[in-house]
Length: 263
Image (cartoon, rainbow, N blue to C red; front, side):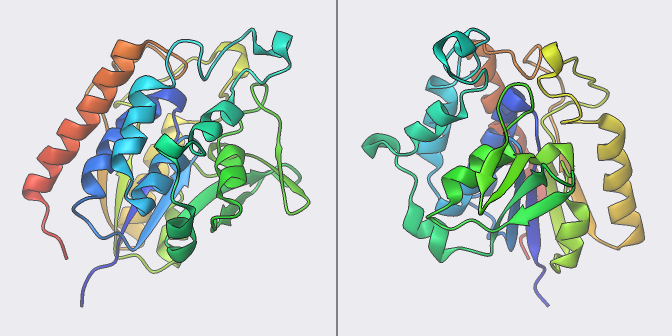
């Protein structure tokens, strides 16, 4: 029986450049059963589903550095510190338009992790072309840097606050194998300024959930993560380091594929 291989793209703010690099390679060679994105992972997950890898990489390489995406003076201009509205506006331009028809036709394969503002529990959202922009913003809406996002009369925050690596959901959905992409090297413990991403990524939770899922549920698991942390923090906006992080993800994914046997 063919294996159902799924992919989890985890959180990490601008460290998500690594996951974007990985996704741009794996998405061209593996037909994933499900693709799960939490926090910044929703962007790479969505563009993987639409197979628009060049657009995804162009945005990461050329449109999120310096003060374009994260700007602590934005409130003076009545904008959010984490300007997700700016980011999504790029996906509506003719030159970088997200294929909404493809999002709708693939509905069910793409899963965005959101956190309910009311309960604090994770909710798993299957976006269509009509609501994918709101879902992406909600899944990456970090408290203090962006307000909660309203979807269907309910409010949601960053998915990493409740389920950064949704292993239980992967198992419940019937996957046989999961490739997990962490944007942090082993032992990395980011310190976030002004609580920008407090609770968004907890190293112990990643490790515990990863091993519990693989040992207790017979879920074949593979973890891809950077060997070192190029970006100084998840809010490091240096363009050169962002691009180096993307390249590391691409190289790691290419190395992984050399030994990977597709089901």
